[in-house]
Image 1 (cartoon, rainbow, N blue to C red):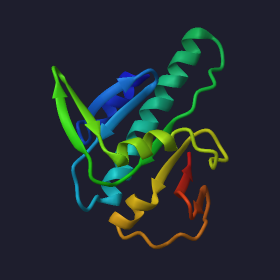
Image 2 (image 1 turned 30 degrees about the horizontal axis):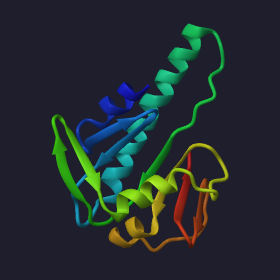
Image 3 (image 1 turned 45 degrees about the horizontal axis):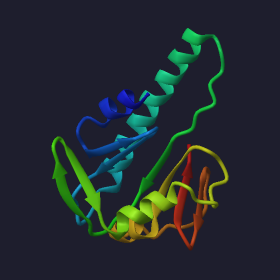
Length: 143
């Protein structure tokens, strides 16, 4: 499953580390492009869903897996350890904490944090289909 996400990324984001069932991707960009980021995430979602269906058919059973994307923005540092880029800084700690949030209503989502929304100058916080804005955290887009 992780391979499908990494391949679908098509090197848009850099890969920092894989920890259990989580992948930490990053990208240096003072002003992220919402459209480009969402295209990559939806490509990754499609690859994940395709692989999940393939695996369910092979095993002959339903598999209950979810996918979470946290889009966060802020200053962080990077250092190299052999072949890995280790990231550190407050935004990295915040993103890790947000993976375990209590706000999500459904298991699969894209969370656009307030710092990310501010960076892309996003202002349409009105809830619409599959989206809900929570002022303390940001915008949840349910998949």
